[in-house]
Image (cartoon, rainbow, N blue to C red; front, top):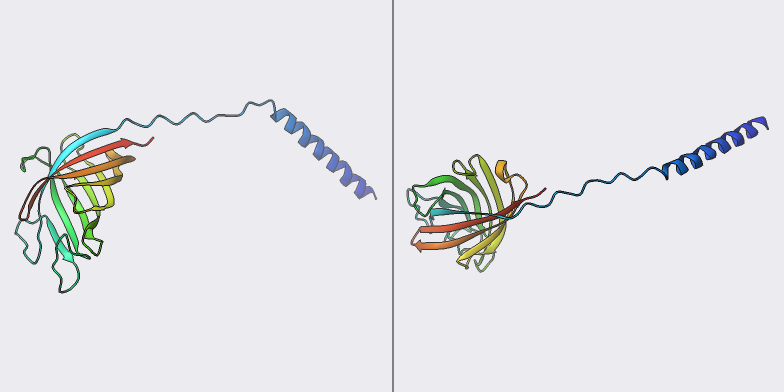
Length: 191
């Protein structure tokens, strides 16, 4: 019976300590986390991208968009379902193709049966200019029939670390395999 009394006494002491601990904690103010910093204001940056697209078996010697896969027996072009292009376009500071500040590298895939939608995964790699040594990743799908395409920014490195936003690509000129796009990058840095 003495072990029962010892256990009961120990339990009473334990409960008393718990009650005192709880009452003393009630006087301690809660620790509040600081509010998150406000998101950065959106920033806009305009660049240009001249490209030369190879299609239907014709690959110009200076092509920057080349089909590498597609449905056998079908033409490889930006309107044919299943066609995959690898791109390595220059980024220029102005419409002048000699003002190169980086490259856009990645893939474009025609993902709808009617050829209207394209899926792309590209990285903007800046070699000079205000964003030198930074990259920006864009991933999304868009209606390829439009003259202005929009896609989300999903991240980046250096100046674009934790970037979110969107990119629009507006076709300024297109004749034959040559295209000039005005690319507007609108981004903000997540806290």
